[in-house]
Image (cartoon, rainbow, N blue to C red; front, side, top):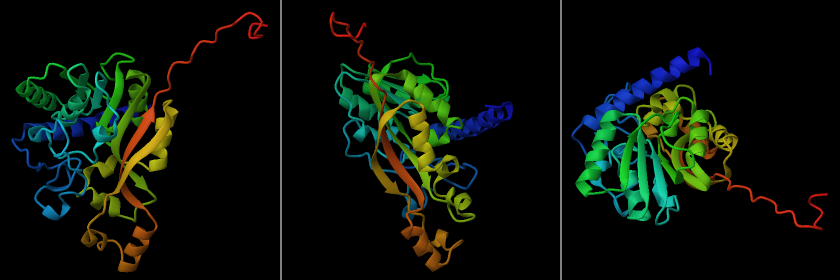
Length: 297
């Protein structure tokens, strides 16, 4: 990465850090209204004041064991913990843990014998999550301040990694996936919900789409996203869930005719939420050389 790229990445991270700090400090568990540079919206979700867009990004957590309303700030785009295949006793790391909701859902699955660690680069979010964990008396859920591109976590720590609509906000995604690979145990896996693009969005649409889906600004093509994951060393990539982020018809009409809207939707292009599963390969089994087998010849 060049010095200019690093400076740009640092600037973007500071914008995200400040906006999510504003969200964390807001006394609001029914949806967040924050100016993320494109109007009143959460940084990764629709304007909470407009009911018609209320489910544009979010999936419903409320029926899941461990769900905590005060820890659900409506900033996700999927339910990665639902698909993460967490077992009792697992060590689970949530990247971009926010106020802690995914950690508490993961804790309901890994149980008293497991361990859950939330990582977030926004100090007020860490503080809020720690208060939420303390209120529940959880002793096996912890929250760590740190950058996903350079995680302050040991190598081969986690059985499972989850993340909800966070990687698209990370400037150096290749580095983030390399770090994810590092902290997973051999044979471990991740389940990550994120925003990706398919095909070229019509001219001007992506900028306006950010009014309703703030994460679009950092989203990349799905094929490129999957390639980054594979390049990090992950195998057995599977899309566990896919959801179209359906932009409002009146927004599309600002840029497209009715015929063009029909073609755009028919061609399968657009903005999608995916939940992606991938594995870190297990350690190779050492070959045992038996006399007469020929392996030592």
